[in-house]
Image (tube, rainbow, N blue to C red; front, side, top):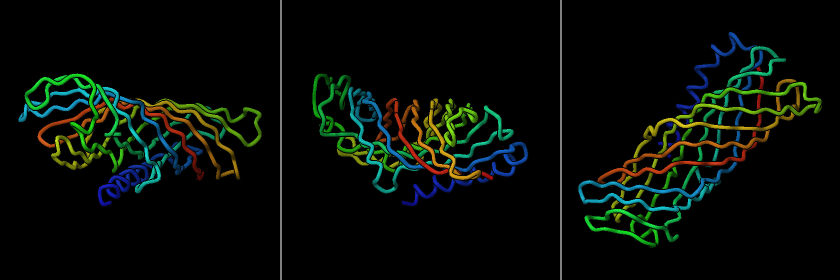
Length: 244
């Protein structure tokens, strides 16, 4: 998937470009890689197609994650602390996850569909036959972290964090039987909350598990118009960290 590779290279390049700057001020720097799964809450999907007279909201759209389908769920993170005993630090975090609309599910619709009023319950595929962010909801966030390095839990180090996130979704859609595949499109800012714990294997390597929640929106092109939906997503991830 060329588009997926492009976004992955962009994330790796962004993190790699910050490594020299990070090492200048941070006495402890970690590079982490992780995988996991996500769950996005049901949401309203708004479709606007001015040329055919459509302005429709489908309420209660359900999203599937399918984290093992190529490209699978993955993330990269660069974390820095000013010294090994510091409790406060910062992290640049990139996450790639996916969303697939359950188009066979009943939803409530309200608005205008091709110039005619539409309301009531209907299967989503009466209007939307495919809506996939299968090249990913790509989220780049800058986070502040707080950890407990002296929590008296042996090798286990708990931490929490909060950050500002920016979204780049990539969509494949079939709306009213008209297909459209977009490139990566900026969808604005949101926020992220996280909490986890790292188990130190050695002084420089560790394994971690983490729960995250991020909120933003996906706004993408469809045939003849635009679609948007709020994103409220929970994540459960696990990975490995390398210190240098």
